[in-house]
Length: 147
Length: 196
Image 1 (cartoon, rainbow over the protein chains, first blue to last red):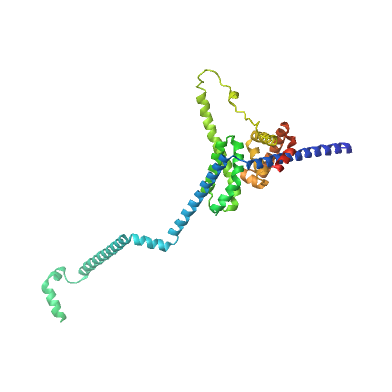
Image 2 (cartoon, helix red, strand yellow):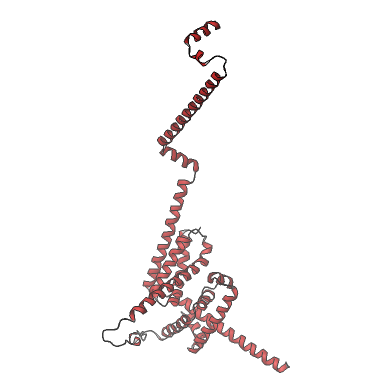
């Protein structure tokens, strides 16, 4: 490309760039006018916008108040547990008593079963016939022998 | 977390231009007020736990999404309206000419400078309404809200390159339309602005 062509090309670029800058300036002026115009709304529109804003702010305030109350109620887990026990004291006591009774019964049953089993084993292992243990006179002789 | 006071101050600062921008987009002042109110409520309900510094980025996004919801509802409503109206006719059996019902504003009472100013504003508004949605969004965020490319991209949900493309096209389209309307004398409008 010779010097003249380079110069023409530069001029075209400058004009294009110049046009772009001019377009930007026009658009920026238009935006400034629109910004200014937005400050001059009618009273009815301003009132509605104000109402909408207040509704939103009240909504936020109510949400934050509710959240704060919820934290105060549930924040301390020990307090929460105590609160629970206070309310359900009778039911909790009944449940504990029931569990204890069940445990006692289960232990008793287990011990009785063990005694029965050991009793059967003793009879089978001893040298005397089982009838001897059913004889009351044998018991009297056994006691006199120990004396 | 933004306090109610901070939210109130922020909304006071943005509500007017939010309304104007929405009105240009939906071309209906009543609908624009409803949309702005919905956007404010959504900001308070769903983003009330965000810090105040994030509100300027959140609100434009919420506003745009609310506008899109409005357009979707309009589309469905218009579909039904079109279907139903095609079965009806007016009482005289004649087709109504819509041009007969257009209201023409009588602005002959306004002082001349104010008249010229309001006419200039109207021409700019009409040009803005003609822009495609994405170009209008890019113009509003970059030139009206003075946001940078990155912030605009985040709000529009696109890349920086897309923002630049939309802006470039918007600038060209707006400037062409305004020049066609004879508003190259916008420099005079700037003088009107400074005197106002």
